[in-house]
Image 1 (spheres, rainbow, N blue to C red):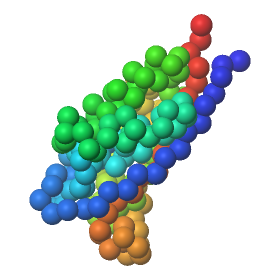
Image 2 (cartoon, rainbow, N blue to C red):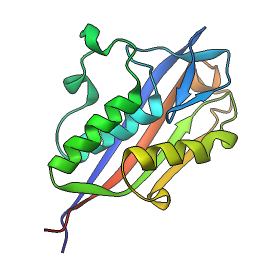
Image 3 (tube, rainbow, N blue to C red):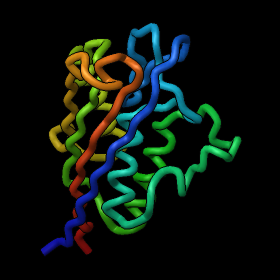
Image 4 (cartoon, helix red, strand yellow):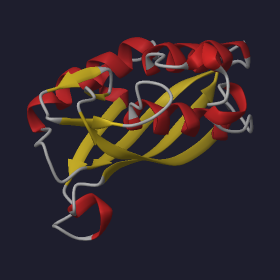
Length: 162
């Protein structure tokens, strides 16, 4: 029987006028984007950290510190690709990813399929192994006030067959 590992993660970034909004590697039409050292893709960060957590390898900050200018503005797709390669080297593959983005605006339903396709491609898994959902803050808290966004991820990793 294959060895299984479960990881979970939460990522949060504030919103800022004039920055592009990138979620799941997709540029979203929005006047505000997420602020961060990288492109601040909160969804890909949560997924990458979920995988790192499942492998007991810490978080993104341990691997890509925000004090290192080499990572300034880096695309989170590159970070997730690096995490994929690390996972593969450790002898695992994605069983499934289940992620939720909490964002008051903009509506994300029209972008979900493209996000899922990007994530599946980056993680070399089938589309049906990647779930992405979005929900609003219902005007409550920092999400509801449109001050920031959060992403939550749970992932199951399966050991590769020998």
